[in-house]
Image 1: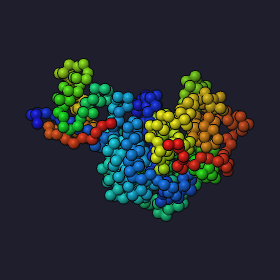
Image 2 (image 1 turned 180 degrees about the horizontal axis):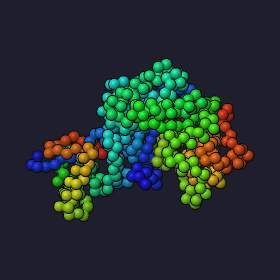
Image 3 (image 1 turned 135 degrees about the vertical axis):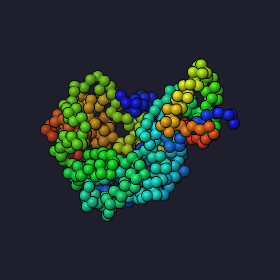
Image 4 (image 1 turned 180 degrees about the vertical axis):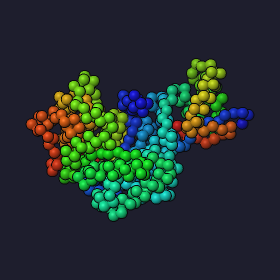
Length: 102
Length: 372
């Protein structure tokens, strides 16, 4: 397990579905509803609780989208912070469980 | 435009079934006087069949899933079905009379992350509510269940169907909802029985009472706009589609039949014989429903209300033609605005013609034969 890694997992309390490549995410507990763009959707779908965020950004985001790695990492961290604030994503420095996203 | 409306419009434009209403049973522990269902079990889908349907709905892009009935808790496997649905990450709503919900069930509902529980309450007076449900002490039990659900922090909506027996009680139910910290919604629509019997339409509240409901600021927000005379229909109004039925919404019966809407009993296919997406994409009936724009409506296309009417194509279908008028909605448009509809003018009526007592033959919501 890499040191100082961030693991992200989708909460089992949320509802989520892809619509034309963009993910709709809803947390009934606080009535929040988000639609995620293509990049955020890719991070959300990769949030399996086992893959470190750094690896998701490197392997999925930078590979798939033509973005600067440092900028992508900073954007990903902001995105994760926002969704974890709404308890849509769970964040830990240890691996977590996650529901598969469709 | 809110984000939710934007998403709904996107699904509509793409033809994605973003919302599905699924009745898991028609059996019920109440016998409401206005209910349109046949409560006998004619071969409900099994647990595995429903789970398989839910898998297909998730693959098809369904996000909002409403479980209803009948009474959903008449199925012993109901929580197993909800658990499966939540694992598939649907946003789940439940419609129930709640009399079978106790503390343990309320806790389980919270654990499963249900979005909203919609519960029918007909009156704040126990004797009136119980006379409608024909289940003694149902008021007491339903209200107690709402308390259990609210104690769990769950979102509860009280649905108040108005009919002749309770139309003066809406203020009392609204107050009860406030006391219970629940949302309140009112519905003055009574639909014909599944077998075509329209006798229950006699329970619809009289037109003048409907006018009072529409002009009550406690019940209707933005009243000035709501009750304003209709604007002259624009080209966009005539190019528009009646509602989301068959476009981004559909209904699945306990027997696996798929319909454009719970209030639109046009059989389009059966999930025991066909895949959901085959029915959704290729059913000729679904395609016909989808093809109808306001300009194609036989009477309503020339009606001044066409851009603002709540015309339900399912109710129109039950009256004889999915392209025709829906008398119940003509009535609502008239009593809302005071302006006669094209259908009324065509019939030479100064007030809407009631369909009460008509005996039009309707299609039953039952398993239908679909070629394999």
